[in-house]
Length: 219
Image (cartoon, rainbow, N blue to C red; front, side):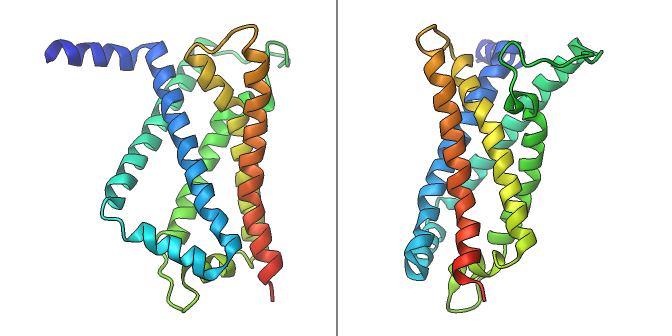
């Protein structure tokens, strides 16, 4: 048992171990986002369908366990990412005089830590808005969502956050696959554009919801 703990500790504190843990937890969060998006699409079906979906989730006895597990995955991803970023900065204490796009550097890869931190702040705001606020009228959580997105500043903030999500995923998805060895002359040309297309799709799909709520139900 002690030997197993030593192996786990060495793996978790090694550079490749931290990269793989960050990649794995990142992909797990992407999976959650896909499921969350699928559920949120019921918003377009109207109040009854969306409220039924919300009530179904709330009725699940394992929901608190799932939420704690998701929180653990999210915190692990953040810790590993910050640790790796700090090590990279420590290894290169002097900034490059000229930043070039050579070597595959993109806006997504250059802003990973900043978009990640912004998304953390957005998540706290989002959860405090839709998870902790009780729906008191007959419109239920559907009414809360629609009413919340009548505010232009809120819609703009959400669109900024989803732009950050798109940037983060544009590099994060392809990087995660490459971390697990999916780097091959035939695979890389497919993984990069596929990862970018997926990032754009996910950000745009989430971003349409506040715009739709604001435009369809305003006034």
